[in-house]
Image (tube, rainbow, N blue to C red; front, side, top):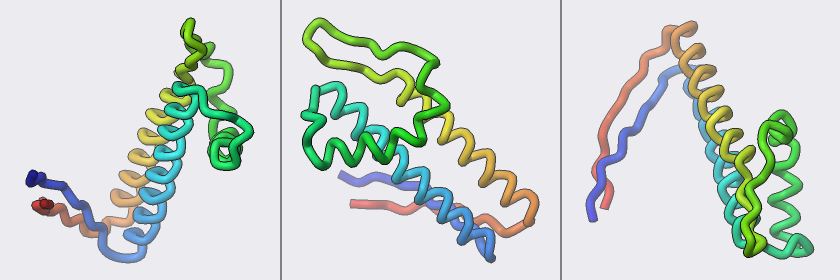
Length: 117
């Protein structure tokens, strides 16, 4: 299956900052997604990996903790709505910061489309 991916490259020193922000947010959102799946499928909280994911993400979820209550199903599964909201908000914040960096520095932005197998 072939797919086309849009790749954005920012030249200059601000490109390094943009890459750091993108990498950080990608890792954070990946951990949020893992957290959602672990809670949804009732992972054992005594497990080292599960505890690590919960511990790392807990700090970043502090501002979102009390927005909504989690949705608990009869089966014991839990859907963390606040974590979903955090994913959206951190994505928007990173997009705004990157856009500001690019516009304030006036660095050249190159976009290319790459075919992946």
